Image 1 (cartoon, rainbow, N blue to C red):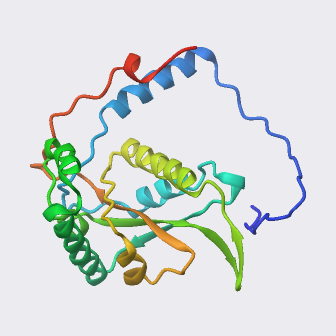
Image 2 (tube, one colour):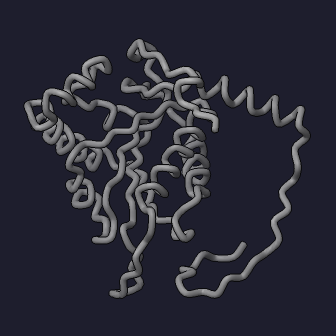
Length: 228
C-alpha cells in the first residue's frame, strides 16, 4: 500500500475503479438491515467501565478516515486519550465551560431546546467511558512553515464523524458527541499544533447497565425527504 503524501499541485492521475457489483436482492436486504440497525442508535451519557477491545475503536476510526473530503485533503486528526490524568483535566475544563454556559451564556432559547435532553454541566462520561476520542479539524496543512489552505473543512470532518458514529454503533458500541463551547482548552491540554481546532469530544464504550435516554421521536421519512 502506498504511503500518503500531500497531493497539492500534483497532476491529475486517474486509476481504474471497478467495485464488485452487489445483486439487487442482496442490496435491498443490506439496506433494510442497515436502516433497522441505525434506528436503534442512541446517544448515551452513562457508560459502563467494562473493557472494550481497542481494535473496535481503531477500526471505527479507520472507517471515519475513508470519508470524502474537500480536494481529498483529509483535514482531520483523531486523538485517542488514554491517560487518566489528561482525561481528568479535560473533564475539569469542559465542566467549567459548561457551568458558564448553563449559567447564562447559552441563552434562554438554547436552554429551552436542551431541556428535553436532560443535560447539565456535569460530564462524567469524559472520565467514565473506556475510551475518549477528541476529533480535530485541520484548518490548513502545515508543510514546515508553509501553509496550504484546506477546503470544506467543517463539512469534511462532519461527514467523517458521522461515519465514525455509524461504525461504532454497528460494532455494538455507544458514543456521545460532546461539543463544549468554547473548546480552545482541548488544543492546550492535548498539545495540538496551531493548524488544528477541536471539533468534538467523543466518549466511547458500552452503555451502563442502568443507562437511560430521553424519550425522543425521530422525524418520519416523509418529513425529511423532498422528491422533485
